[in-house]
Length: 114
Length: 115
Image 1 (cartoon, rainbow over the protein chains, first blue to last red):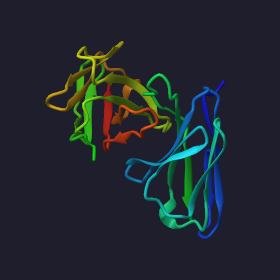
Image 2 (cartoon, chains in turn orange, yellow; image 1 turned 90 degrees about the horizontal axis):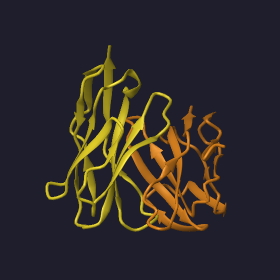
Image 3 (spheres, each protein chain N blue to C red; image 1 turned 60 degrees about the horizontal axis):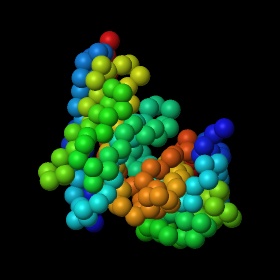
């Protein structure tokens, strides 16, 4: 009965490869997010979707492309991976009503680019 | 743009004692939410407590309470009767009032608890 799940939990890959991280939530929430936590543990928003529509698109390289096939899923595809992409990526979700204040996080995906 | 500042990179406390983690923020909005999240070594982000800016009463969750000073834009977390399991990184976060707005995080405070 996991609320927000991510796969994989760990991802080790070579520079230049393309990889995807999947996120699913079973909370019935309308909004989903991707956050990046860098090596200094700083967390920053990357994208958010509401009912499959992109609503936040922070300044991230074009190599990062989110996709939301339905409101329970938000995937993150990364092309041409670089060393600097190594980080922990968190998916989160929140309801949009009544005020949707609390975001619930997945367990994170640790990406290591060699 | 909104910012969140946690001025204490590291704090330590002994078991059963009380510790306060500081957080200040900057915003021009009058309605917003504030949160404390805990991140243990497992890296899971766990919601500790939240505060609605329109509520004057400070939020409390068991041993965790906040001191919310809206005029001073201060939002500190008090942990009473500290336990070994409280050892973690704690993040203060701000969210605007509109649903779907992203969280803006501080840089975190690492709390260690000794027996």
